[in-house]
Image 1 (cartoon, rainbow, N blue to C red):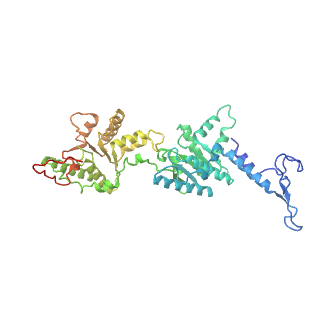
Image 2: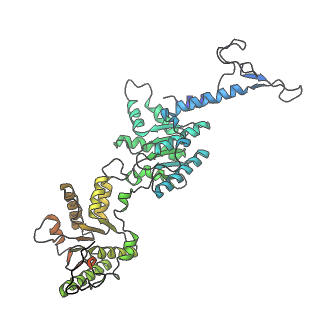
Image 3: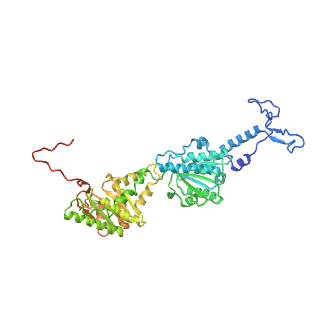
Length: 463
């Protein structure tokens, strides 16, 4: 890796005299017909002209100097094979199919091109692996090199390895030289921030690099597949600095599978309210109707004062989810946060967060579920009953029980005398109210009266 100062001193200089006498024969292409291969000439102007007798650089020499400068800039940039990554090869719509991600990518593409026209401030490009972050960052670097800017590209894990390597006896570059070269590069591209091993030493070096560039307001481009909320607070404060930093998202940060976790569809919130809950049920007997009325009353009281737990149990179609969504709608109307999770989907998403394509970490999602202000667990017991799923649910429920965090549970489970760790907490009268809805399935209402069969005729078999 070359010394930055030396590179800068040599960028605009080249000998015009060459390494041979002007009249020496050339091997290869014919010499320039204008200057005869000398690289310079005197202006062909009449006596008395201001340029008369002046030596000027020939166009062929200017082209060679520009090409030589570009080559040296490219060698210094450390882009290597990424020199082929250009805006022309980058699809303006990105690789995702959903409209939100396409819109985000188009916006990022436009802002990246604008940054090349005026390379000032900081640009942070975020998105899952495989969304084109490195390509876009390299395209920025290559375009700026074409325009004569000095750019240095560094993949963060490799950079930290090189910095560690400078302490070795066989290193041909001093640590201070390499460190200063990165800190003071006219334009620095840090690719893969957050993918390095998070040792105290590595975090300290990155902080020093980023803090120096922030204070000096040196143009910087950063790419990361990590959520900024999970990264070092000092570094993130620099990336998000008002007036200096811009964040570009290449893809929606929540994949389709994740978008349902914690979110309630607007149609459900409009349809499942306390006003639309029919406590008369589907021709229930007196006891069944009483259970519906008790559940409605308990749900309304809980929505007004979310203290403790409310568990609604019963067979399918009795209105458990309806009441849970109605509680959420009431709380959301006051501006209170609510996390609604269909338990089987929640378990699937927690497993998904272990994959490399996940935009969020398992720990982050798990902590969010455990500590959210109001958690609604819909259809507890319908999840795949693996040991892992049982353990995760146990950890969530035990934590929320110990912390007395407001929780609503719907389930088809009986929660009988079989006191497993989850059931015992649901039945705890100091925290939880357990309401059993014993009523006929709403969905099995007959839409029209049955036709009586005439005597002496047989029913026609269904077609």
